[in-house]
Length: 225
Image (cartoon, rainbow, N blue to C red; front, side, top):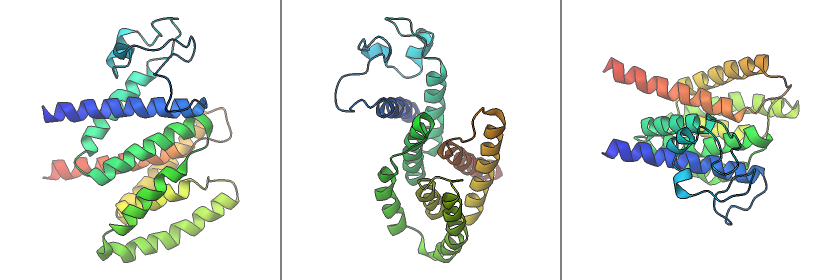
């Protein structure tokens, strides 16, 4: 029962974050008006907002105007529910994943992010960091951040990516951080090969690389035991 509640909670949270990011992208205030169809402006009923299920029942269409918003929302909500459940035992990693998912949605929509939402969490991570590993973290910081600043100067990397990398440094050991960068870079280059644009939002690739590295570690630990 507890597992089911955690999965449902993460599905609802994923759906809410998608809605918030889309409202920000359309410059719609967050505190007014219930959820509505962006095409016909009809307010959506509560049963149209059930994560995953409503999209499946409506075949990815608006109930009122039949505008096709796509099944990708259901796929993302389902994936978010399962990933959120798998990370829920480590609340620090889970909160970081939630924040980065919101920033990833923003980056996909507009190639800009409200990086300020990450600063309070970054301060918390610094204050609660394991100081027995602090020398390793400082070493990684001194190696990575100057390179990132150079890439920002050359317009190859967004400045908002740096606080995200700092979160990774503070949360994980140097090996997981290295795997994160490697996987994110491979995914990013792969995306460039198949995309018809010169620049891609990099935050989603950072999040994907970080999730793969962390979930991979969890899977290996589970099977080794």
